[in-house]
Length: 204
Ligand code: GAR
Image (cartoon, rainbow, N blue to C red; front, top):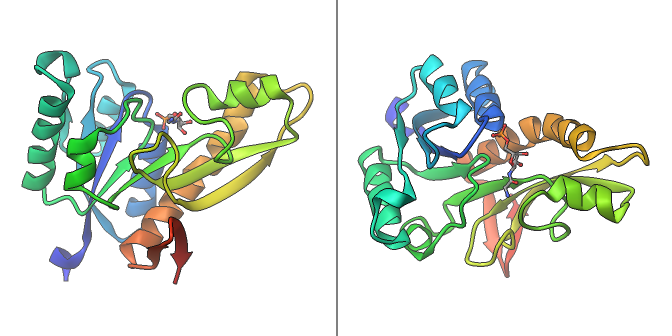
């Protein structure tokens, strides 16, 4: 039974609160996956200690230690294979995923982004939303492909933006929803309920 569980790898660059929310969902029995491994590209990431606290194997890969981005990603893919990862969840992983990882894990990498895509792609999505003056922003979980924040959308949640919101206040409002949405998307994936059809995600 156990060996049929989806083996999840989580990649982080920083705080790791989305990662922790996923870990808690698993601990509470809401999400039936095996947390196989956590990878950080940043040795200073706070999330590393969080993963250790939950006794999940954590590895750091720094791009500067490799000749090229391809070599960096080859090393990551090797580890992901060793841990038999079935899905890679990017939880605040702030690097663009390159062709090596995309090929090795085609349609098996998902990302959480703090905006209602396709609005406000890239960095500082919450600041972009505040600066633009939109009434709603939110968060999206999507499959990762070779277009930045442009892969098929799995789930989204809208969050109202107040006129007085700052980047910080909006970020924390959105984060609460991120913590729910990411586990929901992973759950759907783990239950084989996501099908990509014409670049859109059908939930079966
Ligand atoms: C989250 O808000 C996540 O959506 C965002 O970084 C934060 C990471 O927080 N990701 C991106 O902006 C990716 N483009 P966390 O480390 O506490 O999960």
